[in-house]
Length: 212
Ligand SMILES: [Ca+2]
Ligand SMILES: [Ca+2]
Ligand SMILES: [Ca+2]
View 1 (cartoon, helix red, strand yellow):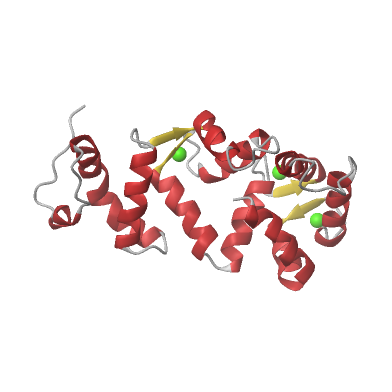
View 2 (tube, helix red, strand yellow; view 1 turned 180 degrees about the horizontal axis):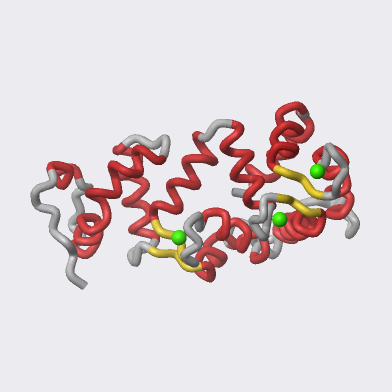
């Protein structure tokens, strides 16, 4: 593959230095136009983006992470449980363009929301994660799948009081609060309104944040 040379770009001089020729070529191929755009799309500075990019490329020289690799990496953080189901939902949420692979942009755009986003942006991201079929509504079935995957991932030993019914109870509680008009589904408006008014839910969102 022929790396396009963007010799006229003044940004080229600011690319991360690297003794690894391959990495440098990839950086040249990837960064010049992407970097400006990513600065606009995220809340990271150019320096932060460059540093994130170096980390990404050293972990993932191809510049793409498929779901299998993502799951393997993610599962290492939860050796006591089975993280594969939750990793799938996370992968889908990060893969905003639905390409089936995570590129650097997918990662930093997601990370920017999760680390630097406003409450509303974070909640929007969470809603999208819970809305498995992306139709704009969270159903009980979707919420149950997510809850089960989180409980599976945590493993039984870390939550000693855990019972088999716990995910379903968690979902019932969630719906009692969230489904404000009682039609059986939760819209983003309901989700947002409830979360912003309810400190319990905001703190239970920690479960979610801690598992990212
Ligand atoms: Ca993608
Ligand atoms: Ca849905
Ligand atoms: Ca509703």
